[in-house]
Structure formats: C-alpha cells, structure tokens
Image (cartoon, rainbow, N blue to C red):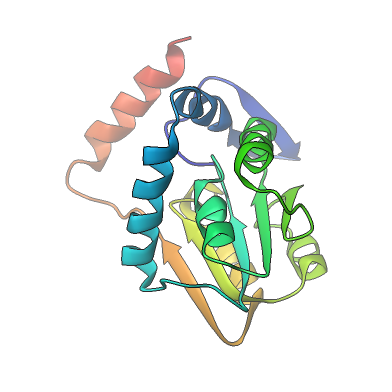
Length: 183
C-alpha cells in the first residue's frame, strides 16, 4: 500500500480496488543491505521518539516492505504484526523476516485490510500502532482511521502519517497516472 502504484489492480470486494505497491517494494529490497536497515531504524526512532519497544506490542498496518516491522522487532517488541492487503508486500515482509527475524513467534505477517473492522479486531489491541502513508490510499480514509483507533490499547500510541492535499497535488496526480501506465 506504500510507494507509487503500478498498473496492477486488485479487486477486493464490490467496488473497492487497491493498487499493488508491493512490486515497487520488491524492487527496493533487491538492493537492500544492512546500512539501509540501520538508517531505517534511526529514522524510526527519530519519528516515534522510541529507542526501545521492550514489552510493547506493535501493529504495522500497511506494512509495505516490512522495514518498520523489522525496526520494531529489532527494538525488542514482544509481538510484531505486519499487515498489508498486497500479496507482493506480504512477500517482501516474509523475505525480511527470513533474513533478519529469527523468532517467528514474535513476528506475525498477515494479509488484511484496514477497512475490515472484524479482521482488525481479530488481531487484538496493541500498545503501539503504526501506519505510515497508507490509510489515505484506502478510498475510505476516515473509516480506516476509525478502525485503526480501535486497535490501540488504552494508553497505547498511534503513529499515523497521512499525505495531505498541496498546491502541487494535481501535478503529482498526473505524474502518478503516467507512472501507472508504464510497465
């Protein structure tokens, strides 16, 4: 659900459509190295003001490449759950966990949607819920936000990043549409 969408679209149910951002994450991870992990962790710590997640549970909603999940895992979260609707993103996260996450009991990876309140409820509540640049792509951003809020434990933390409309938004929409036409 992150990055530039490519041409591939998935029909989820009825009129709901999402674009596959996972192929872009697969390309990104193909040139991935340990220094990228270290940089991502520094960025994560800076954004969240959390240098440790010991004792926390972590939900990464719209996990994309899985890099934020990996950061949470490395920072000691006792349970990490990576969720994405895109099977290519799920493949990315599985690859990261295979290479860098030795305890599968601490790091779960599931296919699901922020728009499915029942699915989110089935995961439980988390002390730390993270969704970076994702929910505005759902087509029902406010519904997704309402659902995600229910995933946060009392006194838990929600880290949410949304892109807003900007004077250049129309131009970027045209650029994205052009990119979507390319193979």
